[in-house]
Length: 329
Image (cartoon, rainbow, N blue to C red; front, side, top):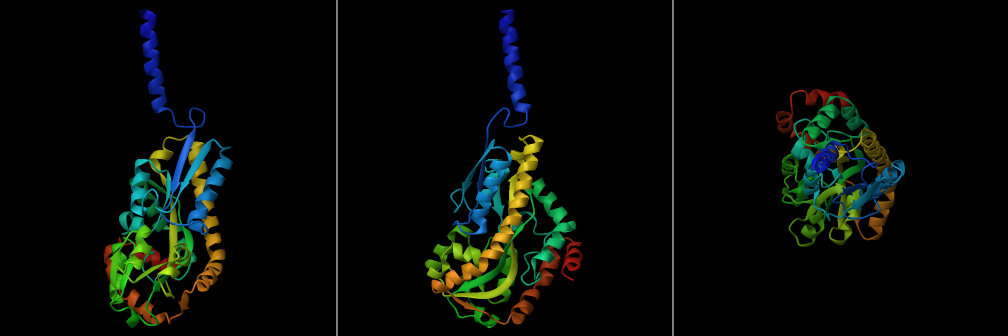
């Protein structure tokens, strides 16, 4: 009986040990699920995840196995981020909808025509804005690892657009980011927030007549099948982020936490290079499919968009404008 009692106590002790011991390949195999709502391979948004998988499995000597999901099979952007916080997804891409939910009062990246190039955005990330964004995400169970650049966002539509007046009354799909509604309303549009996986169907069925995204995203969705024109509005320097689950990382040994974060940073640099090298090829391919490209005079668009700055200043924390102006001078 005495031996049985000690055996029972050792069993309890063993269970408690497993509960408090960090998750590592020494005591269990690590399976990692990574996902995006982006629909197709061939561009950085999906190819980057496969590059990340390759890096992680190689650097961990295959002790971490990575499963890749894309095309919204595990949900749209908001659904993926909620699963990330729960730890059921371990890495996902976060875009403007996520930023609008968690860091809208401390970022200025989403104001059309405020930034003209990626170096200006990088300057804000290296300063206070980047530090505050990282802290805000972490409070919500998300490890933010910076950004990669997808090129500029461009308008696609069935209208011939050369001036802001051509936008009046246009039903346009936007990400689930309320701040962007303000700017596109200033253009005279009728903006409608629609999740990313529903873009093609909403254009095909006439729910909206236009949308805006970077060239790679427009190519991914084969928008030439439902849109006549790409209007090179260049209204936003588009960025995407690799987000890791804080809950998942917390179960890992420190060395594996560092490995996954470093792989995310390295992959985002790869994605930026891939995107910029690929864009001309994608444009030519879209032209071959019948998409026409229009190049409007941008100054009238810029003036209207920047005319909404008072709205953003009121929403931002007081220090954000000064930090932004330091970067764009």
